[in-house]
Image (tube, rainbow, N blue to C red; front, side, top):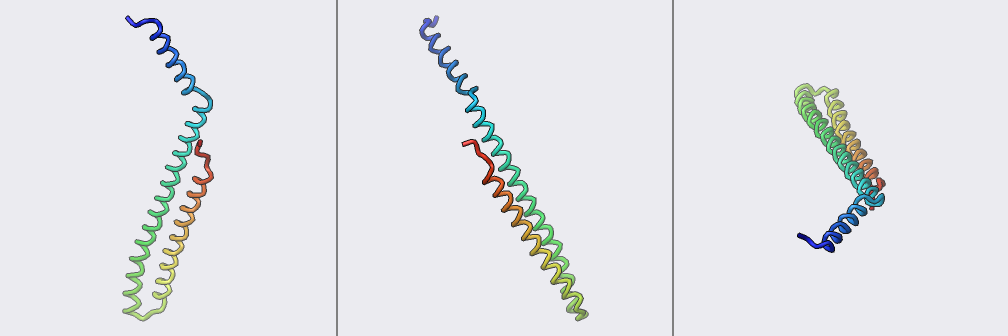
Length: 116
């Protein structure tokens, strides 16, 4: 059987640990840290979505440019050169949008309280 001084020490240790874990400072800090992690995760998903958008626009534009180039060579019709230019512009615009998404996500995360 354990002596009473050991039992008192264990009870005191558990009580102290409980006080620390349940303190408002610990709860606030951990809550802010979890919120920061959630915002970081959401930011990374938004960046991934932006990159997917760029990839999809680029794939479609590349196919369109290929077709327009073949038609331009075959017909010498300048409308196909205009189509190529518009498709290249669409890829540039998608890249700019992706950059904006990334910069905005980074700014949100940088300015979000981390709980430190």
